[in-house]
Length: 346
Ligand SMILES: Cc1cc2nc3c(=O)[nH]c(=O)nc-3n(C[C@H](O)[C@H](O)[C@H](O)COP(=O)(O)OP(=O)(O)OC[C@H]3O[C@@H](n4cnc5c(N)ncnc54)[C@H](O)[C@@H]3O)c2cc1C
Image: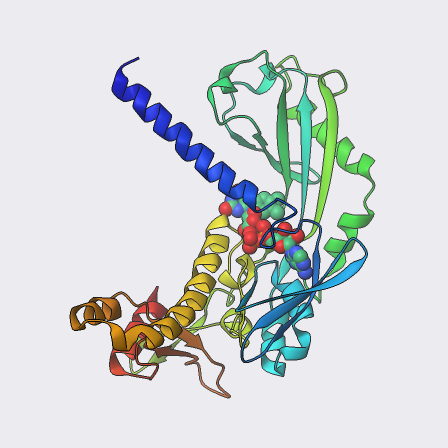
């Protein structure tokens, strides 16, 4: 191996180890700052100087306090934990999140031969419950090995669940396992017919997962409300999710639901939005303290680096609910308003 290639690999290995060891820090039980697995957050509180959550773990209640709290579970749990802080309009906005239950199954196959040439994701018609299956170990060179064992992950069709139509979620919980298994058997025997496949011979296990509050259902009017027409100009109007995710004191709301679509991009977007908001607040505070000691040139570049901060506020009437505040001045300056309107268009 050439020296440069060897060096690159060493660097990659080092990087992997650095990332891996940083993540391990989050799980070490003696660290004060760490992830608590199996902890259920029941309540959020906010004051002028901090925010806190009360959580339940191993039969005991705890409270954790910090400068800021981000609720990044699904919004129905945030709504319950913060119910005592919500105005009627914000609670009402949270109630408009529509979630749909989803069914998934992992089916292990003795041999990948019957599906090895079918690609990553196979959709098919005519199932009682299922829509498609993906090959769990498709990413990687082993995907063309017909002799390996493999796992197929099946996804159920998504049905809307709402207050007026809660029956689908209930059905998901009460349908017997055998009914879902029979459907998998009928489907696989049919779609893999002629490929030397027999469900009872070739399937070694079926794992079923019932996700009651799985995905946000982006119904019309949820990403954005219907636009309004003002003197021939179409103006985009924020929908209920913008009201729902308003910051409450030092508590912010992340998660896919209030970004509108059930996708990892929404989850990441929510993380960036809430992080930026909280960091901007913290940096503004620090810079106010530091400002007087900075040389003039540094003050200038420092100010240019600041992000515009969007504050969402419900209005009693009318569609305009976003107000831009320039992070530097903290006022409704013209520059701030312009940046805010750019942000609204995104
Ligand atoms: C079956 C299925 C298939 C999907 N396929 C895709 C796909 O192919 N591509 C794609 O982009 N997206 C997909 N998604 C959507 C994607 O998984 C979600 O959008 C994403 O995981 C949401 O991330 P999140 O961090 O917002 O929330 P989550 O991943 O739901 O994480 C929230 C976490 O908060 C925890 N939590 C909630 N409330 C509390 C509480 N009170 N106390 C403590 N913890 C709490 C939950 O246990 C959970 O661990 C799929 C989702 C499902 C269910």
